[in-house]
Length: 584
Image (tube, rainbow, N blue to C red; front, side, top):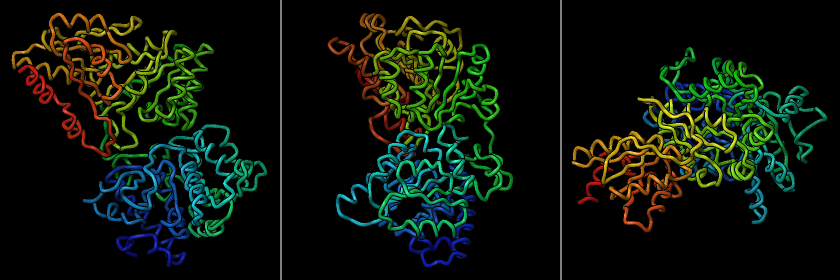
């Protein structure tokens, strides 16, 4: 069987079951060759090879619609839907994203990178289909880990009322990124243990018909199950028990480590390169473990991403009940942290920048209005972080700094971060968000302050005149580099580290009016609603000129770091050039 000849699912629908089994073996081998050389989501895709083949074999895609949750399990789907070349030819490896993307294929209905959305989206398609009087199958494929998200319950709850064709495939591998957390998973375990016959059935309780497939890596059993539900006239759940990492021993034995991996040796499973450099996730984990040991009231929360916080299995064991994984449910983590703080505990919620937007209401309503001293550590909040369009770290400054009551801190180095974190955990006056710096890990050259309770006081790093450059967080080094270039052209600029992004040092800004004509702001985030606009607003009716540098409000996908910085004029030569033009 030649994989390169498969251009669409139609090419596999005439195959026998034995040929499908052979196809699954070949797809798995080709996938492993690419992923071991390129990196990507390993375990989720290995476990779903047979289910993906069976879905496209039974259902008449793209007329029948399949919505994939999170979509980091869609690599085999892409191989079957006209994108095989991106998995067979190393020169084409980067031609497809790691997620579904309608710009790539009509088989991809949505761009999806966040979890727990598929049932709601598919339910909407089914409702739209019914409103238009059309006939086709609608399938939502959702992983068991995604069921912990509140939207998954909302989608299931509403989907059960559709009274028409609506098929939910639950891919149950007893894993999220790490282990699952929550009471729901006891019921899934009962269903697995009883071959789907347990009287206590979450899905039937909601109103779904129900089919269980005990071996979700048996393509023949899957084909049979999907044929039973095809063209159904009512909502049904097909619960399949799969093996995350199936068919590759290192991924089967180390499921958490192989959820996502950089390039690795295919024979041993070991990474092709080891990065032993200092990292903020490890600094965070060490700091919080020390705080937890010193104070039983301290706890760390994660919403299903312990690896982001460098809390692997051993560290989680060491932390015990003081490490809380609520599953993939950012709203729950934020609101629970508020409750812990209200009860007198000291919670720190560590979260990826693009994930915290899922809990905006909790940041405002449950935390800020109630003035609970929650501490939030934001990871990958930088243009120098993840580059997929669904995981951009540009928007958290505008998102959080404009909620009243939050203190938003932007450290520029390790010592500043640790000082801010220790102050935030000790104080009980405010909710505090700390934006972990991006790019290279830097250390302070001198001492740093330990008390941050005198809010919104900026720090002058270099004293000059005429031009002041305010470099926020990750971009303070950019401000310093720009000042060096300006000095070569006869302008000695003042460089300021604002530290606080949720307020302004009006006293310092006012003093700049005495001997400065131009204020530059440089921030590692979107300009609209960002820190720089606050400064521009302050000087609005004065004679001070203000120029804001940051990122344009738009989505980018899989960008090159240097190119996007250049496109936004976020390089020291470009900013210096602009300043010199303004002075002329």
